[in-house]
Length: 416
Image (tube, rainbow, N blue to C red; front, side):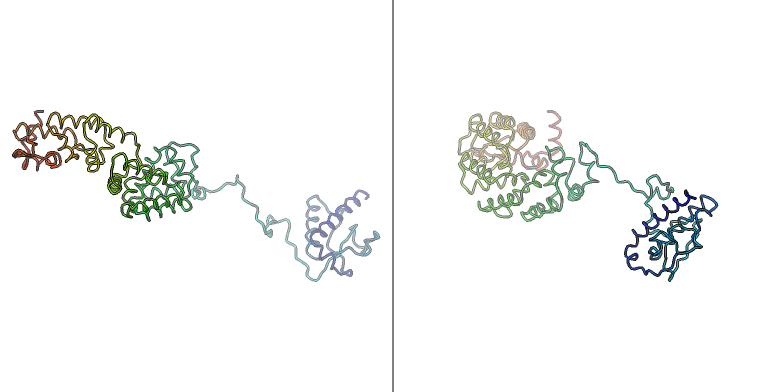
């Protein structure tokens, strides 16, 4: 009996603690005249451990429904009812008693508000498994931007604009730059700026393919460079043409652009207007290296024997001669001057001949020589200009210049 009394006392103290923790407000407002709870069977009368567990759950659930306070007699250790075998009965409001469910049922947790979360090891059906969509993992290392397109909104939108990522990734650190940029925050403002400058919508993709680095430039710096070109009397259409044909132009600082314009003006002895016209026709003169330009000027003057004023005329008419291959210049001049006998002043009048393929010049000159019509002196009859020699299509050249058929020209070429 002593063991039973200690166990019953411990259980009652646990019930009191639980009730006090859950309903502190009701414990303070409970009436002192509430009746003692009924319906509990003493632990000693329960026949099995399962009955003991059910009785304890019923007792806890029954007590937690209403408001309770210990009876006055419990303070001095007495019991309020001689019929109760509980060591420490509690009092309950009986105004709205709750009907307890059968605790033997397996639906003990159905009235809980929170459903326990699903376990990661929970088995699922095949239909549920098919509906699961796994996102592709971002590659840690890759040699191509193509692997990142599905993960980067920026790259996807650039591809939609027409940017060729296979060409961009060949440029040093261009791929890393694009992966660090946000389209809405960093790129959109640059695109709007380029459109305002005059780059057409269908040219944005090719433009960014050639110069993706402009996307990392400061917008204010870009606007300053455009303002400088406007201050040098370049029109809006001219600036648009220059930027489109030389995509790297706006990467140059104002100081560098000013130095380039000054170099061509002073080195060639051109006026401001002619210097401006020169760079409009070939804007990559402002973005390319100056060493090849200096070397070609020396070749024209020292090796080819042109005078300074002749070089000015040649360069102004044919700016590409400044960036042409030195070997090609030498070979073309040697054939025109030493084989065909064209003097310097005639080459100065028509310098476009230096842009023609040397093989084309040779084939047509040899065909005219075969026909006896190779006459390049304007003072002689049947004069053939250099323009007629290299610029006309084969059929027109044969009929109007060589006075022969295209078939004769083709047969002659087979004999070479």
